[in-house]
Length: 378
Image (cartoon, rainbow, N blue to C red; front, side, top):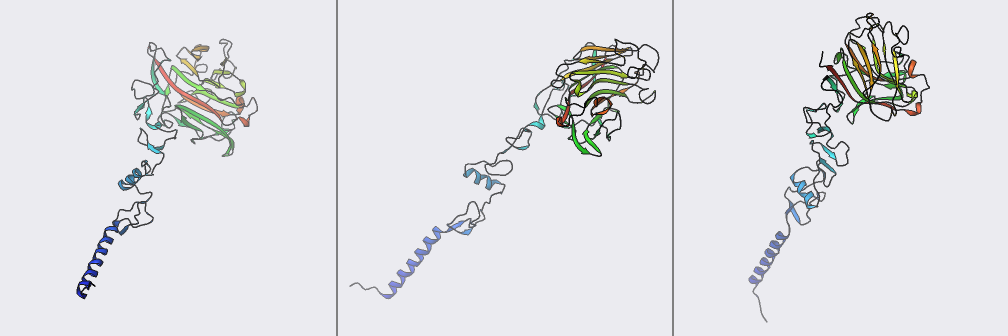
């Protein structure tokens, strides 16, 4: 029988305890000890500050996402569906505004040059006027994100201000706005400021005033009964007095129930409606013109205005001319500055020739461009 001295046994027990403690230290190490963290370590005994939590944005969380096989999106979500587009905007990959606010024409020679655009698209060049006769002096291609306040004023009116019209004109973005490089004037059937309808009326007074020249406006018209869209001009300074003494030029007017007929006309002191007007191609103070699909397609409505006459066109077809017969301002007040007006009225003493179809609302007039030229021969 082997006997172990007491001192030797005590030494062996001490060594066994030390060995056991050393192994425990090897197994239990420093790490993340928070069970709510993404990288919680069950084997960690002491916290080393490395815990990562969902929603953290930074290198550690990005590494954690990568460890999970996902990428950190631009909102800080692991595996999210957001990325930065070419404009630098963080957007959902399905967002229809992807690249929208930096896409535009980058060619300074184009009519719709956009100085803020970084992705070139949809440049428009002047193919509609004879460059040997006309020089572009003012235009709006409606290619900005908002209506250009340096070119247009909104008129704010209640119902019944003129022509017994039923709408209230507002500057709200639901009544006038830019969409797909077009100005949209949108009429709604709603209760607003004692009116049952709302719409918009815009003018270029003080920002675009013109005497003579060529004006081209490309537009698509509404179709609902009781709508009355107009593209027209009024005097800026009213030199000869109030309406109609100082004149009015109606480049295009249309009544919804009048199918595909548009009208060009003028109003003066001696030639208002058909009263006192000389027989000018049997037109009196205006002439109607048939335009197939006027509410389905864009058409170009134009005038060529000189000291001698005002010629009215649709898609470059001259359908009526009003001539200066030299009898004075009462017949010809069109020797002063005029500005452009774009509006969509509801009802009124012409739009109301047929009952308003409330089921057809909202109704819209869309304007692709407005271009004003001066004759290079002046």
